[in-house]
Image (cartoon, rainbow, N blue to C red; front, side, top):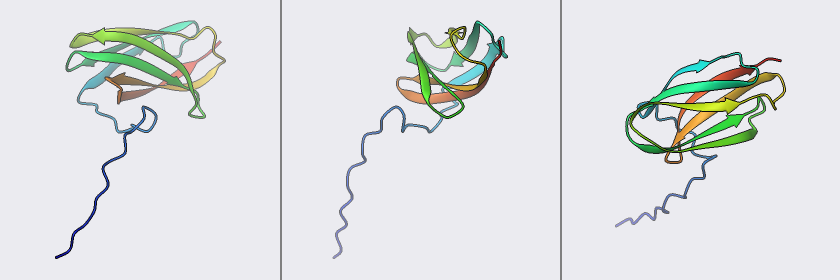
Length: 110
């Protein structure tokens, strides 16, 4: 008889949890994009959830975390202030209950 020992799965941090669950969140639009002072993300979620948005520079470094709190199922909005950021390409991810659920590009121009 062979007995295999399987270690329990390690807990993932927010940064490691990169599997996108697009069935839970759909980004409908990012307006304006390109942005100068701010942009507004319109998204739809399939269930009530605690929402956050992570903004990354083009090197993959997280530069902003925007907590939106508990949002209701349906269409919601998050405003991203961009006036303090240099021109360039950025990426953002919307997290539902700490799980990355949608990802999009954002261009900032001055």
